[in-house]
Image (cartoon, rainbow, N blue to C red; front, side, top):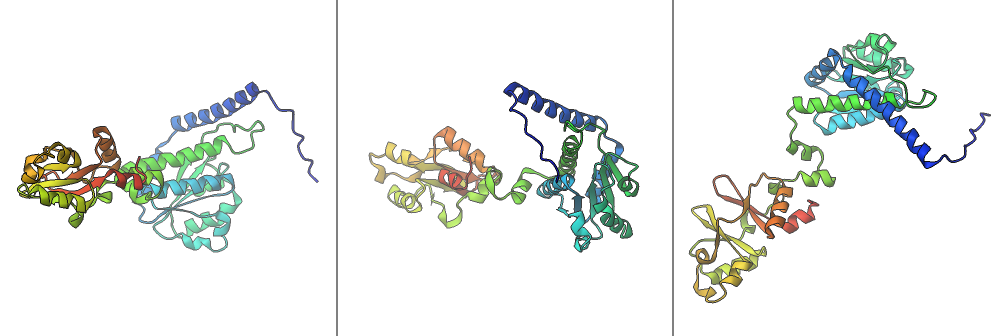
Length: 328
């Protein structure tokens, strides 16, 4: 039976902090070595992935496998189709997940991970491009690869130099670098983020006004000559506390509850254009909902009309729409 390690007495806080700082500096140094030692193969890898009509198949064993999963997820969420394939499962049928048009990105610090052998052989047999992420270009993996992304020859942060630490940090950072460059190469924009991240806070932050606004029959709309008796009925029926005054299809003003109170004396004898606030604050339909919320908070108003560049009212967004969607 293997002897269990005997725990030491708790170290002072200063020693714990010093050791943690050493680990972080060790891994930071590995990243500096990686950044400073990038070769032309990095650009080759980006071009190879961009040109592939299929997916990036990211693979690795053990800690490299965990890193590979994260890299595949980052690729997929930033516009580069990707999938993690476990190398051991690949040998038992999952090789069928890899097809012509794909690119394999295999991670192995030593380049001698036995479980990768069948997957590497498969990629060679069917002419599927292979990118190797390894510290040893002359390893079994490196010799078979079409492109080698060399990891720095940096010490692991583990005191015994064995636990994958600096090497896995470098592998993950390299995956991030590939994904971010490919985002730029593919023209990935903010609106693309919402397509890939519809849930959670990021999705809410990237919602546009158009996605939340009310339109069509929901809009409270008045002609300039509308008597305010009718105008009040329209404002009340639509429930937004405001109405757009539109002439020749263009917004010329709005009427709010505040306007009604300011013109309370003789209100029923007046027309919509006589009490409307002219040149009101509006927002573009394709602006972010977070911008609309910030504008409403700054102006201390509860609703904004979404107006096109030509002045046509396309919708209305209410502060409650933003809050319900989680926009903050």
